[in-house]
Image 1 (spheres, rainbow, N blue to C red):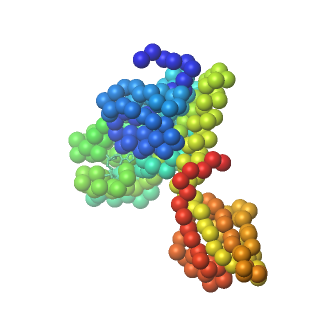
Image 2 (image 1 turned 60 degrees about the horizontal axis):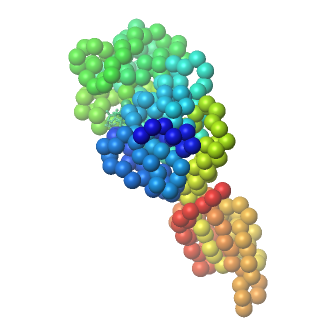
Image 3 (image 1 turned 90 degrees about the vertical axis):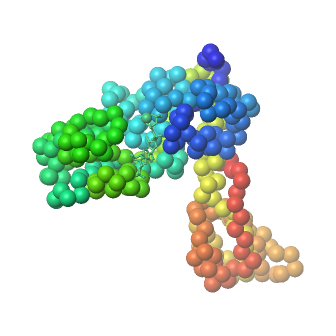
Length: 296
Ligand code: PRT
Ligand code: ZN
């Protein structure tokens, strides 16, 4: 498929931890993506956007060069890339809430560790040399960064390095290799990035549409629609309790003078504790319903 400059281009991880959730996000934003897992590109059937499925490590480059206007990538990969660039080439437009992990320094379990000074003069193996170097610089530590492409957790056993600096989610991999976390270098999750390369008006408009849909999808994930009844004297207490709700709608209840229905979009999670507090404050007939779509 040749590059069609009337359409938007979005870079996604082809196959890996972020692939399915990245596609799901675009589907929830209404893009119909008809392609198998083995395709390198796909065309949204009902939206002027083409998807490019690449290795996650290539996504920051694609977006920076303007080959793709958008990309979805982990902050770990993105920040490692950015530290190697003389100037900003992309902007982060949304944190997506999936692909969460952290980049951590780990040591062999039996090794005595008492703070970052223990790292001085030591060898640390990592696939994230720039992020690790930044951390060491911030801490004022001189240590030797040993770059590895993968299987970093094997480095201590192979005597390539004493410490490792690697991604961790559950910690099971470190544990299985007799390692324990001693420092945190970075918290990471998947983010939506946008190229800083200028685009023509047509693509800029499509980009705005896509962004507003994605913002809507992300907002609905947290938001709930809440409905309840309350007497006039309880109204103030109740509306103060509604989490993240701006300007609730308040309408008189037919046939019940002094009583009102309160409807509000809560942009934060609504927990059972909140419902109990609302009830104690005089609310009745409380309903909490999910929101399917939202445009802010
Ligand atoms: O082929 P390609 O280059 O595209 O993929 P990849 O193999 O480089 O990346 P992939 O699919 O493994 O991960 C993509 C992104 O997912 C990463 O860049 C992170 O942003 C994010 N992510 C979230 C993770 C993890 N969680 C994670 N646990 N990436 C890697 N891991 C590794 C971890 O290092 C360990 O080796 O998974 C293993 C299991 O982790 P534990 O702690 O649960 O045992
Ligand atoms: Zn990768």
